Length: 636
Image (cartoon, rainbow, N blue to C red; front, side):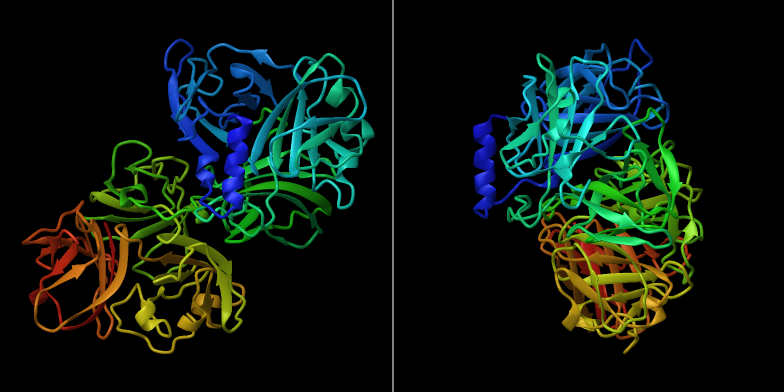
């Protein structure tokens, strides 16, 4: 992108206009290879245009021992750098064929496209206050200032000599030292701890327009160099609908043996790279697409080795405002670069955030039009539990019809771009309803209980929630559900009960905001030593609707503000007992019999005339319902 365009975009963001979404500048993309060395080239879609913009791809083979590769638009699609070694920049055939307007094209080579083998790519688009690429020719002068277009002070700079195959990758990071990080260098291709040497950065801190280089490793005379610059937003980010959101941070924390460490970023991360600065250790990478969870298994890649992906166990907790690094028994300083989870804008099309499918014959067994963050799966023609799967929980499941704690679910399989479940789920015509997290639409929060009264739990829904489901993960207890009409009380998702008044679960509407919800001291929602998950829902014009209606003997139309009717509807009576009815267009509801199923039972589906289609929402056949007050949740 021309520098003038970058500066104009930066000015627009700083003036308070709409900024780019994080998904427009960064993507984690998963794919399975299709090539055999002579056929099987594959287009990978990221929805980021690197054919007409500057950017970089960092590719990893997840299954096989393969060197991580960096490709960038400056050097060209067929020119690689390998981050686990000192090798100079070089052309390679059949690995990367081209940068496309919506992603990139892999060649027939098997490095990252071997048939049936899993891979991942991280796309970084050059944008002010996020990422920049600089190339320069070494002069041998010490120190020397090099100009950049990041538009802010870099948090991390990665430099490689493109011509000398003996020189290490060198890294500047603001978290390498609390007082003078410019005095130190780290080596991306090695596990070494930090080294104090003024020949790296001339002992000079970078600025918003320049960074400083020194000796041969960063400025050898006559050699060509490339630098990748990563920003640090600290209340000055220029992203999102209001142009004021932070999306990337670089920092550090101190791990003390025997203690967990909570790090507050101000956002929920989707990707992180970490390295111990004062101790040996690898450059670990984690992301929520492959498996970075709260209380489940976490999967690491290392930039400095050719190792395949590894399961490091339960290493992290992810929070709406940061993360917790769990105790590993070490005492050391750890630096990190973290990128925010997206999207940042509310959806305008329900099909981009909600899908339904019946089980297919191969992984993913349920297909979607989007990344899946939560799903409800139920066999339609036989009795059995509802399985609720959540990306943040990894290979775990909960059942909406029971009080049971979470169970191990090896089939969960969220590491797909367009569906979930990586093993045959079972018989009885299983069907999945699948949600993607998005502002104003749907959010998920994991937290640990502490028995405190009126405890504030942060969330990223971005609006006041209109329905919350809370479940204790670690112990048996009822699902607590609340909506605006009953914030001080609760319904139980696993029962037919009417409103349960005064339960010590949710702490009332007065404490419910666009950034927090409250829980009480009771064990169902906040017991000390227990773990919890909360699902938050809200109304988005033309996409979803949370609301109420009352029946008094007449049919009624429920206007949800939709243009083509509701695809998925949940209904529950609040002033009396009644099932949690669930209807959808995949199974079918029409003017006569509707396929009906209940979230609180193991029953298979039944046919009865409960609701009818309506272009703006749905209609209620009063003869099939008891008179009373009801809540509903519908998706277009």
